[in-house]
Length: 302
Ligand SMILES: Cc1ncc(COP(=O)(O)O)c(C=O)c1O
Image 1 (cartoon, rainbow, N blue to C red):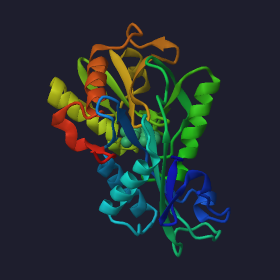
Image 2 (image 1 turned 90 degrees about the vertical axis):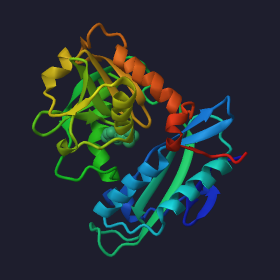
Image 3 (image 1 turned 45 degrees about the horizontal axis):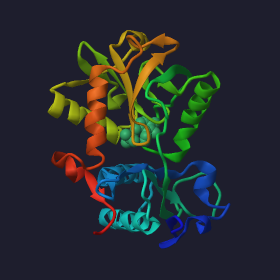
């Protein structure tokens, strides 16, 4: 089966899913995207979409910011996504990319008076950071926190600059600071520290993206490990003293950070809290923990 996409209200082979060069969002960043993981459980021979509904709730929030009136209900978005992924017959971990965008073939910088559309496609995608001991640097690029933090395509320019700067300097990922110099997030992940046995992470008021993996980790830490999460400003120097540090994201899952600005985080090994959270999370996303099966949507009918 070739991979499929849903575009212009129909399912088409991915390599035929094309849009016009005049499409408004391509020029001005007037789109909202999501990233949803499909996790392949080989024992159950099933692909599970993780927290799909929450991803679409966040997409709707972003659409609200950009005046995108989505011509689909939540149920329709979920149904289209499941049908599209099922058509692809994937038997491996995948990444689903929904996009709501200003679809008018009309240039000019504005949000009003433009048509809107929705597309979604999926592709196989293994580990994102591809390391279990990430080496990070604090980025020289700071993200703008004037704009509401949704997954707006135009906002990711700063993240791309930060990521490439990090890679070119020999690191795996960048940690961006707010304009006030507090720790914000990675280019595609939220950040957690373990300090005095508790989790500490920047608050939403900092302008970070409120990650669904971040929410998952906060709930698992509390419910399964009895660990509270404190949401507060984090100064850059606190990164160097933390007992543990890890990044969370749909693509990156829970990735331990071993080094920041060429200083080891503790002894540079995966910390105990991080490891326990990773173990819980990797079982849950495969629907191997019945307590959290509401978070997993099976793709294939059996
Ligand atoms: C900038 C940024 N922060 C955080 C996240 C983590 O969000 P989530 O866990 O919902 O994938 C992402 C990824 O979507 C991101 O792009």
